[in-house]
Image (cartoon, rainbow, N blue to C red; front, side, top):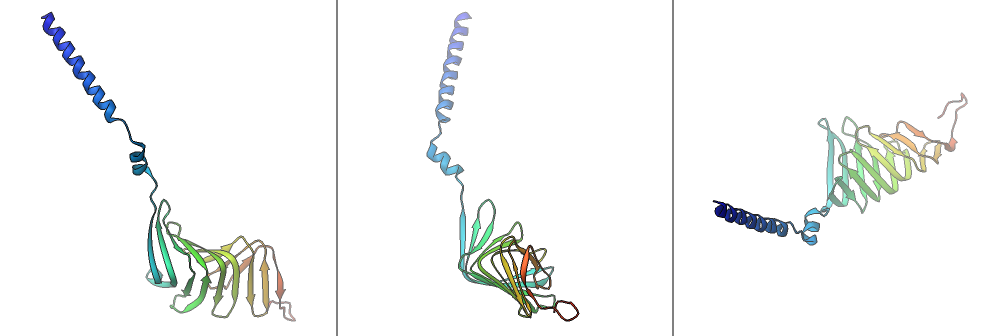
Length: 192
């Protein structure tokens, strides 16, 4: 029985050694394969001559047109407009209340915010005009804002803000940080 036990022990030892060698050789990883499986992949969808509508609660809020749109699928999903964009903003009666032009735009889908830069201009139906080098638009609050230089021109008003501003989408309310400018005042001391 000792002989059988010794043979079985040697057999199991040999089998264990072979299995261990198999697993050790199987655990060797090729760096190229690891890089292929773990590398960050960014996919880009491209569309041309864009005409897109934004609605909230069943009401049309905006119409965007752009010559090129890139939808980038990465950690943070975003849509980019590298060759300019134009947006018409609508009031509750679906009438245009203001419009926007910019040479570049980037929409962050998870944040419902749009970053605009390079010759940003917003004009409302009264002709009031907001100009700035870059601007954020919050889709949920319907607010424009920036922490950079901005200027606002309206009948009898030319206001410049060196440290930024915040404005409603229809530009009925515009608030500047550290403003300077010229404002016409009536005989009663009221802003015209």
